[in-house]
Amino acid sequence: MMRALPTRRRLLRGLLATSAAAVLTLTGLLATAGPSQAATQAPCDIYAAGGTPCVAAHSTTRALFAAYNGRLYQVQRASDNTFKDIGLLSAGGVADAAAQDSFCAGTACTITRLYDQTGNGNTLLYQGPGGTGGADTAATATTEAVTVNGHKAYALYINPGNSYWVNGSASGVPTGSSPEGEYMVTSGTHVNNQCCFDYGNTEIDHKADGNGAMDAINFGTECWFGGCSGTGPWVQADLENGLFLGGSKAWNPSQVSQTSRFVTAMLKNNGTTAMALKGGNAQSGNLTTFYSGALPSGYNPMKKQGAIILGSGGDCCQTNTNKSAGTFYEGAMVQGYPSDTADAAVHANIAAAGYTTTALTVGSKVSLQATTACCTADYLQHDAADDKVVIAAVTAGSSSTDKADATWIVRAGLADSACISFESANAAGKYLRHYAFELYLKPNDGTAQFAADATFCLRPGNSGTGYSFQSVNYPTKYIRHYRFTAYIASNGGSNAWDAMSSWAQDTSWLAAAPLS
Image (tube, rainbow, N blue to C red):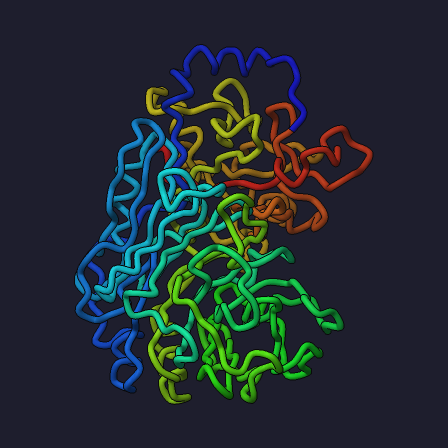
């Protein structure tokens, strides 16, 4: 965003604000009330029943064993560098997101480790100082909130520069040509074409040690050998020295781009002759088998080393940094070659878990936090002095009025129920609407014009972070902050607020916990 001299409005609000160090940086909405329901069977129970037990199981969202009631992951807050383990609401249930929200209130948090639910000790640590060592950093803990079984949970939202690793070669992870299977739940909306968003078996020395040294699921739009058809992302096999869409370097015509909001991705490899790639919409439907056949030439037998990677390729990240992006909700590695029946049952279990987006649920309250580097302390709010909509800082010490001005109630879109409208939390009946492309808080006058001007469609963040809000009647324009005032703006145009500089960042918002 282009900064200018503060307006009088900005100065007045600045006098009311306390130190920016107390800025709330929570994302996601408050969890649904009530305890989570324990699962009667979870993915690792299904695998065990099929004779292919989990040797590593990781998730930030839920238990992967019906009886598991331990730690899921660890967060570290920036204000005092202390740590907290995040567990479950109940055995076999969903993550206790409220514990994270409470611990991280008023400061930033990162996810420093993902605990192994199998008891084998294959806990993933970030590849940086304080973790396994290396050049990467821990992922921000609050970038994306989702709903699982009706309860709020957080994703591990990996951006370039984030990755996780553990040496599991002595704690059950298959090595050499031993058979194994892997799955993860990821997202088709947060990917890139850089190497390599992986989950699975990798080198113990962080180096590219030759064909077959890795056996990991890859998910992204990178077309390693060229000749790909479609846009991706694709479920691929990272076997070292190549991302394989099938059993050779050639394009596999059975591959299908996986663009669903939530995606199940699977890889299994018997270590000597065969492998299979599968995937599907993690919310519904059946798995698709993209490939089932011989291992690529030069990869028979496999030479797996038994470390586990999440978020990067195997030759990372001690002196170099991860370049890939992706989202991880849950995943497991198993000993043996899982049956197709087990694969299908695990996918059905994932779909039954009810992964949905939490942000901006109709009837909920939300505060919308700017993501541009200049303005991460600022929230979208209506101005107390007039009916304009602006961004301004709100902190833990701000007045109750300022907090309420920056809190919105999500309503079904007045002009399109598939989209949303924002009603003020402290001015009932008044909605966010655009007029001459500027945003105002106005009472609903019941006209079709007002309904259209007050309706916005939820889209993935234009910058790759958070969410963007597309005007229903000007679909090239999105809610944007520009010089601290809110508009609907296109990426380039005749108006000053259509400036292309920082447009993607200025139109991307975090759905933060309601300030009031």
